[in-house]
Length: 490
Image (cartoon, rainbow, N blue to C red; front, side):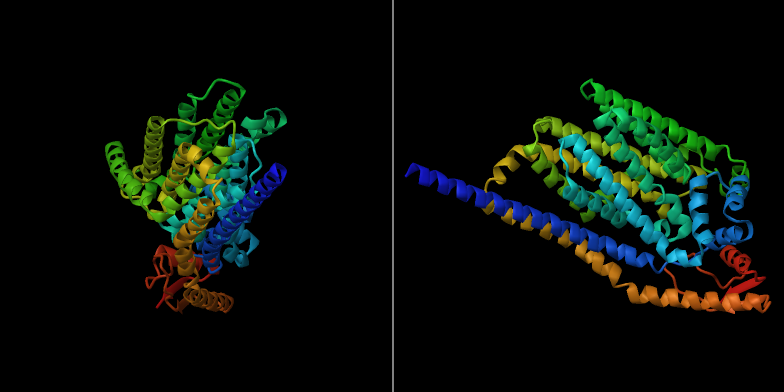
């Protein structure tokens, strides 16, 4: 009789465990689908991107000089941002047909690099292979960045602006993943990571002065926080990789700073800001942006996803450290201060070089700082809740509805975003078709040697379209691109 009861209990326990695994798998898969759907909305918007403003000048120089000579020209005559120049030159070099694929490919690169980085970091922290969980967290990070970034139109879909501020993010994610990989394994992975991180941070410094300052600030903060880790091989490897990343970032920054073209550019664009004003305005504006973005539901979503994942993994892990409520409060405060410092590092270059409020697209790194802050807070709270989570997992009457509630929470945040982006398809398609018609008209005018062309004024959310004034700089860029003396939009 006792054997029968034991067998029945074992059978019920196995059935309960199977049900919980099924509920967990369903919630994870549903979360990945919903986040992927929301990101697909941003990808869809990117397919309707066309040349704007500076893009015509960049494409014109590429057409005249070729890819390599155009790179040299801009370095000697305008800017040392070699990564930005190469990527923004590459699209026109491939051909105008490639422009609609620019933002979608960039977003896909962000996803691939971020998911891989989450996988490596998860393996380092929990000593387990976490493919589906890494996909969920990685997609949540990319969604959080895309949803929170100010000036998304200019900072992602505009070739010149998106290359500056979103272009280095896949490299940043790869650096983070390589760092975790090298710290965890040592040996050959460490040596590969040591070299690759130098290259990645060097190249990523070639995109924008804002990213240079932001990246250096982060690389300085990490060892300051990591000094409290227990001494050992992993800590030493982390510090060595950080030092090499810092060396790469500084080397790339030196290439940008000592570019001969900076003198020409700074004659029209700065630096015009005073140090006192730069510090004061950066401090106040960063505080406002921190409060604004941390209250956004997208930041809460990211923190919640990481919280649940961390709580579940910590409850099952024997290597993850736990801490008291007091330690939790201190760590959250440190995260908020660190996020604020990174926001100051985001604002300061714009104020210094422009002498005024930076354009919204220049604050994209501020959105990434808040994303990382929400990620860290979710991770810390998840650690604190791990003992309670261990009890929840054994009770299907709680775990099942909780999984469904988490999935509903993700849907509540991301579905409206997806619908909003997809609802713009008709408007964007109309604009892209009108742009293509105008493009064919201007090509025909140039072929027929028409020197003065009047085209339709196109409606666009940015202020970067051709204007009614033929002397406007974007009109002049377009005229040079098409080989026409004057273009007027009306």
